Length: 324
Picture 1 (cartoon, helix red, strand yellow):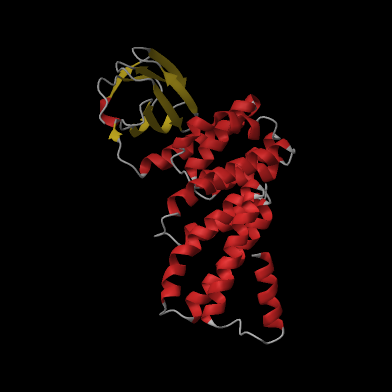
Picture 2: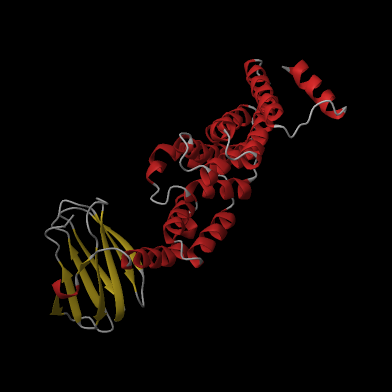
């Protein structure tokens, strides 16, 4: 095939054959594909990827120049296949950037392809692997940037349970100010889900940032809750007199089987974890507050409400049941 490629190119240069003819383009595309297969077998992965891409370029030209031909119809199926093979070889050759570019092309331009789902999953994995590689080279800002591209493909963050050790490698040694910069960026852009994740990572590895991150974690949680169903809790708060000047008292009595997390926003802010069958009491400054209560089970609806807490008053909330 390499000799055939050389002969065809020489014939084109000398004007013996027309490279724009359908038959010539079809033959050359096959030569490039077969050459790529041989290079792959020999372990020359980057060269193989190069030839897969050369074959794709001719297939694209066939589609655009001869759209009503059988060859154009076949090219429609071959292009995403050959692109995926190229991405695999780029990855094997440790060229993550080229692999990502090719996988992005498949997911953007060929959503109906048989290779779409596999390309999507491979793209996410490549983002993660590249982030880990960069963090190992102490390129922390670039590592986090590529990790966030992974994160943006998984807005519910469901797959991160299986990625804890990689998250540790990416964030443990990263300067906290870099993590905070990314967290602030997503928070100010209204991408609260990713902002919460980043603030939680920041405080996990850098506890000294807990207080400065709490306010934005609370606000992000509340902003997200507004866009989803929740139980209104304002009328279920029991108010009693208390001998507490300039102070309100909130009591959470958790009679459910779930751990509850309370996000309190107002003149004072706090995040509380309330165990099942447990009771927690909090003194706060009087004023207007928003309280969000999230059950540990993500399948359960949260509770939220707005309150005016007055001095000399004790407010008790006793959840008994949690709706799915």
